Amino acid sequence: MKQPLIRFEDVNFVYRKSTLEEPEIQQEWLALQNINLDINEGEFVAVLGHNGSGKSTLAKHSNALLLPSSGRVVVGGLDTQDGERVWEIRQMVGMVFQNPDNQLVATTVEEDVAFGPENLGIPSKEIQARVEESLAAVGMLDYRLHSPHQLSGGQKQRVAIAGMISMRPKCIVLDEPTAMLDPEGRREVMETIHRLNKEEGITIMHITHHMDEVIDADRVVVMADGKIALQGSPRDVFTNVETLRKLHLDVPQVTALGERLRRRGYDLPQGILTVNEMVMHLCPSE
Image (cartoon, rainbow, N blue to C red; front, top):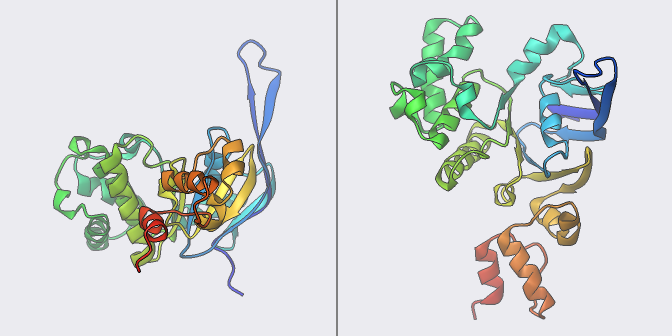
């Protein structure tokens, strides 16, 4: 049986900090509790949760930015606790964060995308090929000579994603990549990562609090208080409307509308996810 690309085994993580007033006293809180989760190669997994739920902490464990306090995370057969294999792990799993400005380091788009491969010591001809391929994959090839800081938010984030692709990762973890973007920028980024998943076969772990961004995921993982509260297909997860609301999470607007109509006596199935589905059930063709 094929092993998962990323496996969390009984993972717990404790944050510790001390204050300037009392440096000898450490405050502790459990950010992840008994996490068991597999991310399979080629999957698109969305992770939902309110602020403080543990979803970003989970993301940072996927490529050894954080290490478990107990349990273990295995990436491509490599234990993240093995300090000698961290570089290999981070080549397999790249991360994109919320603020694209913090990830742009060069004066032109193509130089920015080339930065990672250059640090790997890859030959110049190979770097050039990777830059063109990566920018084409995110629809930014025409902007290769532009200054990244003059691009829109969505374009900047796509350049950041291209920088990850140029490293040839098996998986890209995106930690709320659309949080600082306008609706058009969000649409651009979501279309890009879905295309990379479906056409390029790159595994995606998408951390978000936007319900509408998870509808097309293969699997949804809902985090609450450092634990996995729900897991399943988007339809399975969003049938649990009351549970999600107790976790201070919303559901897609059309799903919420469907639940209200069901309570008023309309014969509708649970877990309607799209407007087209709603129209199909409300106005069936004769």
